[in-house]
Image (cartoon, rainbow, N blue to C red; front, side, top):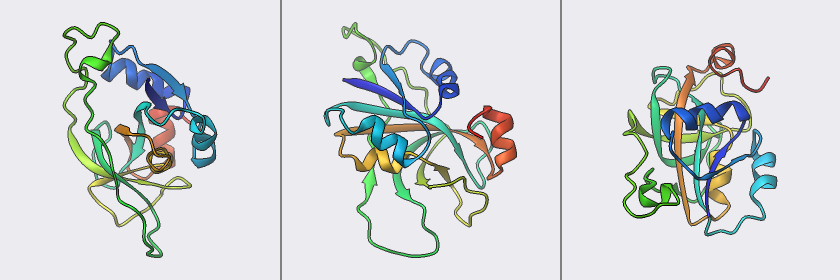
Length: 171
């Protein structure tokens, strides 16, 4: 099974913009860890996952398309051991459609590759640069799926107000 995960219905427009001919199923998980776990807990672990959504960044320009190479939890105030969570490259290849004869890759080349830090709340400040912040990806990756990829579109520079202006997302 191939599945695109978005946190909110409004992120569906990102699929339409960046993967307009994609025929993968789409699942809206809801925002945050508990919603992700509930939405994904019964899925087969061989499900191929693409998470696409908005993310904040301290220094990337709003609108930048980021392919996530690795995901970590954001816990800047303490250090503890966590397993590394590297993601698969964003390449749908022939699996992008039901016609597997010679379908080209549907992913655009991202503006950059970066680490994503997953948080339990919206990040309003950080010393971390050259990365993005979200609220779901580390939990998705930790659930043991064989292949997880992610594309994030920078919605804000750690500003809840700008996030709302850009996305009309969660309050």
